[in-house]
Length: 467
Image 1 (cartoon, rainbow, N blue to C red):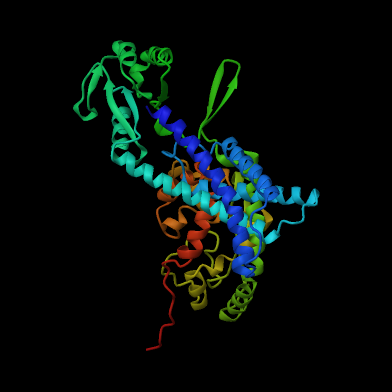
Image 2: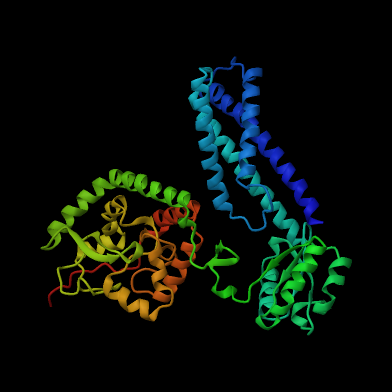
């Protein structure tokens, strides 16, 4: 069954990672001395080097194992895993470099170690991508399947069944369902709830999926006891799952178990620290790199129309606290600065203002908001107080967005939800981002913003000729 197969796959995965990491060092030596310097006579193999790199390779795999990077590929995020491998390898190479320096092992080249980090990361990520692709194809063909039985016949069981049918690459086979009432759309009925113990004892399955409706909750204790008796894993689809966040956490006070419905990955110190560090270094880098563009834009705004260069507007930020968001002024000074919502075609915009809005150049001063801590590089877009008061009454979950810092760009923005677009849709995307945050997701959003999300659909205002 799948348990035995998974153990074999895990062992092969660990062994192949160690081998690739070990070989990567000698590839780095080859590139550094033979390809780059043309030293044909250099000795690539050394027993002492091999021992150090061999120990290092094993330690890397042990760290991967400690970070839970070995297991089923069925539900893993490919991008997030790749980012984690690069980060982990980078930290471990830094530790290795420090070790070599402290013990005065000077024969190692710093360029070789840098190449070693890049090549080992690339090979491990590529191997995992290839393995994942092969396993997906095998699962679509019916191999490497995880066999499950569903307990229930209501909307929860039907939704799970349909999700599995739509995603054959996850490699889950539903052997049947258990219920008092048969429903053709669920497949094969194996028996009633009362027969569960006998069914589990006579069938070889990997997991029991409990998908009981609210009126059937009395069978819950019996189902768990039956699965535990046969040593079968079980998963529960709660009947209130539609209200569940993606990553709910639980707290225990005495005998009371509390589910935190609004827990996010950014509640954890490590996640929050990583995001803030990226904001600080990213904003400093952006300010330095884009300073010529900002200087030219400031001059353009100054000479395009009377008024200040920067537009400062109250926005609502983290924990509903107001702050002054900075933008290059793109409109003529007007009375609707605190309540007016810009549109694709807006007569208040100057011609130069239309241009910088078209290419999102007017947003660049927000890098200073990010550096200060009012904003993040990535997050839900901040709104002005006038609309926050209105939306919190009309749009469900609107203020949940304020649990994180607002961002210069975000998950909603790269999906075209910016400007005069549906607030309800924006909130859905923002809530998904908050519940599923990862450093890899932020990098993905920034990448898509720079390479495709900068240009928006606003129309550049043209001067009208006098008749």
